[in-house]
Image (cartoon, rainbow, N blue to C red; front, side, top):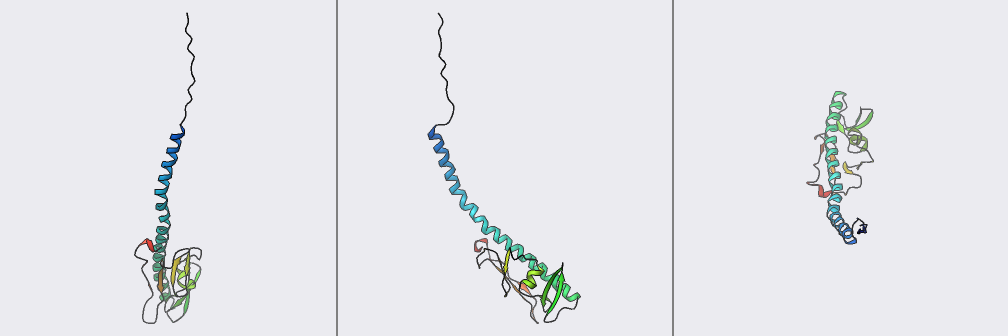
Amino acid sequence: MQISHAHKRQQGGFTLIELVMVIVIIGILAAVALPRFANLSQQARYASLQGARGAVNSAMAIAHATALATAQTGATGSITLEGQAVTLANGYPTADSAGIGAAAQLSATDYTISGTGTITPVNAPATCAITYTAATTTTAASVSAPPADYTSC
């Protein structure tokens, strides 16, 4: 006598409860991680502003050295740096896009430069800025420090 065993076919897979638990865990992780990623845009604008300050400081020194070498130290003047015309006042770039903006090669698509020398990354709040102060007959040009931390950006 032979005993026949019927083989039951078992299906593999996840139960509905297991799938729901995975979705809930992914949702919790996303809720925790999302604010952290949103904060990166502030840090990126702040880093960009710090880079712009370094570029402005370097451009200011290079433009002044070029102005001294070409005798462009009067109340107005102009020099050419890397093919860009740079307007000068008292031997330093002027506080606008034709002066320090051209000297530091700050792109209008990345930075806003006001006529008073305030440099702000595009889409950043007004508190996220540095200020370039043009030279006078008695003082050299200067650049303000960026905000104390990235939360202003």
